[in-house]
Amino acid sequence: MRGMLSPTIQVLTPAILAFTIGILMAPALTHYLYKYKAWKKKPGKRSLDGSLAEGFNRLHVEHEVRAPRFGGIVIWGSVCATTILLAVLANVVGGKFISLNFLSRSETWIPLAAMMAGAVWGFVDDLLMIRPAGEGLPLSFRLLVVSTLSALGGFWFYFKLGVTTISIPFGLPLEIGWLVIPLFMVISLGVYASGIIDGIDGLSGGVFGSIFASYALIAFAYGETDLAAFCAAVVGGLLAFLWFNIPPARFYMSDTGTMALTLSLAVVAFMTDSLGGGVGIFALPIVGALLVVTVLSNILQVVWKKVFKRKLLLIAPLHHHFEALGWPGYKVVMRYWVLSVVFAFAGVIIAISII
Picture 1: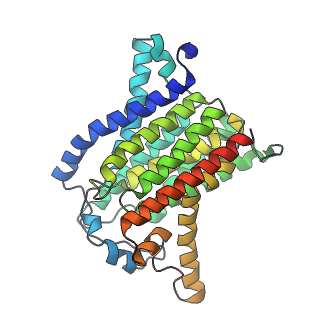
Picture 2: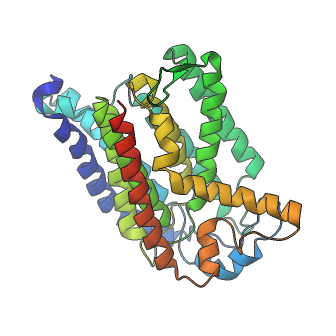
Picture 3: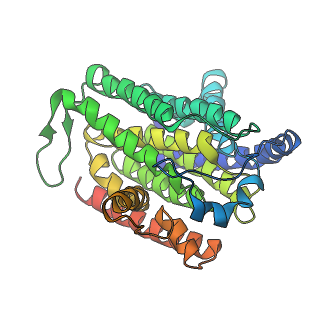
């Protein structure tokens, strides 16, 4: 029955549907976000060491309270709506809709569950952030949540799916046994940390869009059509979000979006590795090179300040450093988009060429 429609249509249809749903739901969401003043009441952020991020606050003191948070609802909301709609049509109407149902236990249950778990905790953080005090969940608690969720994911990969190896390019799979669990936790935490790339109108939506589009192509090449359809639906949701997030942003992605995307991305990388007969984990730092740079720039800034008692960058992470140099936000965003496409293209070519 799955062959009733071509795999290409099976992948493209969820992307188009998620984009359409996202575009339609965004105006209603915007209405309620502005009606209930769902923006941060107190501008300002703190650095990883707990001190006030004076450089960032100087540049973005007005932007943080200009538009509401919760924009990530457009992304995961459109993905969930697309998933449910196609699943219902497949079971009620049948026919060709059966081949469009990409909700499967073997490929999409885990990334969808990771997305929703991240969305819920991010939503809670956003709710706390829009209080008059303007403080969300403590960083330590958020890291504990991500660690717990990723540990559960790691156990699922190891015990339920029997994953004990990771793929090595041009070589035999590396047997690591139970170390799959801590490896998944480390990757999840690393990808989650990259969510700080959300800081300039249009930046995170474009970068994550390129990354998920890459994994849609990688999964498609590996024959994981349902997973490719899921990634394509995420791209559709991201494009709908980006439609309203380009300067001046109607709303911000915030934690409910970044947590949903980063946790599901870690799962997708694992799903396209030994399970899919590919090198999804190896491809992640290539496809997501800008995420890696973002995290490393923050780490280097903290280490540099502790060791040399001065800053390495004017502002961390790196994209805010360029703003501090005088680059307008749109220039930073456009150049990051260009680089994200380049890295995404390179990652896809490498991942596919070594199947």
